[in-house]
Image (cartoon, rainbow, N blue to C red; front, side, top):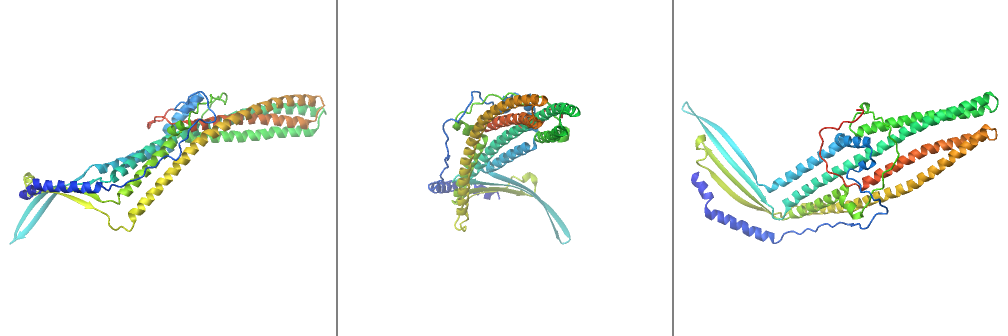
Length: 477
């Protein structure tokens, strides 16, 4: 066996193999496949329709200067289970990328064997042992970049999953902020209804006194009682909505609703200054969902290249070394080694490879159009948020004016009623209108804050994230 091993690695044999491989590589690389690269379908330019002066921070919710909101978003980013699932998808994508990149390294396998042989001749039993050791190596020469394209596509997909994680974190932070502002509104509505009930109860006392003295009829008393009962019913429903929102907030933070209470005296007062919107091209560069769509487009293009390369011949190198011995100490005395090059070229496959090329091309075309739509959606979100905020501010100014006029009208009509110069129906209509406007104004302010959340979400570009094993402490838990 020793002589066979030496002959396998003789200099003439090595030179012949190297020469053969060199000729094959030169012949094949002369007809390397060409793959077209995708170009962005949209390249927006110019400014948005509106802009402020303040630069939006990476952690956009800090612009509201709400300490409770800051704590809750921090807790959600570490405790929300949907976001943890997104982290798991990132880990999986990078593991797939590492697996695809492993094809660049030769695969080497080893085997170790121990055997026992027994024989019986003429009533005599003999036994012997043998030991074996072997190494097998294989490697595919990436002539057309097929392996490189597959590895690059997996790496791009992993990068896209990171951008999708950023998108999920942005969406989660916006959900927490929107739910928090809705909760503040409902608690404010509870306070307003409580004040209105107390006001209407005092009015009911006055009307009841007038009824007992014969100044008004029983209908006026009954109508006022109905107003009080209606508001008590609305108070119960509003308190229920506030509790439901608190439960939803707990789930976003990764907390059981039964273990979460969030008491606060905060209200929807001052809206932060309008952030600077910048250029449309800047938005496209920093939005994580747009970046993810672009990375997926590039990954799809790489898979097209891999499918095209799969139609060309493959060159693989294999090597093996074996040694056997009856004594373990002599295991390396005799050995046999071999080295081979194999060229595998497709001849007839029923059109399978061509169909795969067409499939990957359609996937790349789909990714191209999805990228274009993602860009348009990003621009639309900013423009819609700017328009809604502008018109919401105008609406709030109108509501404030209506509320002022309604208060003046109610005061004058009530005075006339107490002096017997006005029918109670007008008092009731004016009172209900004023109190409805009080609640409408609070809802309008919450919608203004929610529009700002949507604008910040549309403009935000994400921030550096690390997976947090520990959850931040939260008041009331």
